[in-house]
Length: 225
Image 1 (spheres, rainbow, N blue to C red):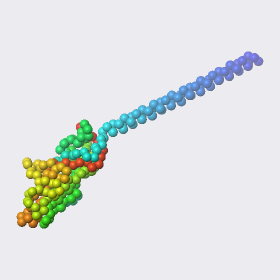
Image 2: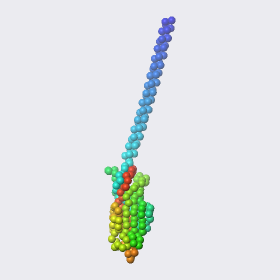
Image 3: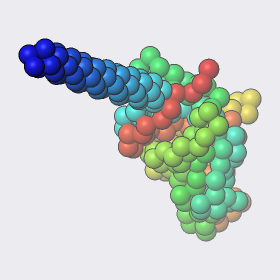
Image 4: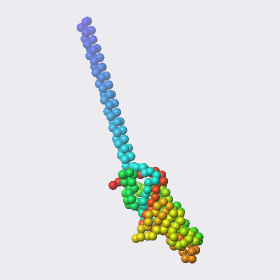
């Protein structure tokens, strides 16, 4: 009888040890799987953060007031152009954000005519235009810039003396006009027509350099090299 009870006790202890080992293996497996899962989450998070940092490094924000010097590819004329007409230009200098070249010289930009009025019997022609878009890496991005204005002299003024509203007459040398800055200095005004019956026309020929300023901050990608 004692031998039988001893055998049963031994079996019970063996069964208990097996149960403990099974539980320990199960707990170890769970902990291992949890560690692997946590490592995967941390790795994915690190990759995501790296991607965000890379995207951020390839995008810059230009502050309001940033200057863009543009060479006109299309001429605009108070006698032939129409309001909302689009025109093309190219950057005459690199567009910079600190030491970073956002868009190099030669980058295409687009603008529009806000106003285009023909010279009248007593008033000169008027032009007002701004930039609306820039093309970077094959994509077009919107801009909001200051506008440039040019107005010809009325018929009662001396011919060829210039244009009002800050738009001075500039001679064309080799097809290139003087740089237009601020209110439009450098726009070319035509002579008052015969008999002083009409005011000056205003023209901005292709090749004219025009300076614009950003009115609002804009985020742009950095041009690929």
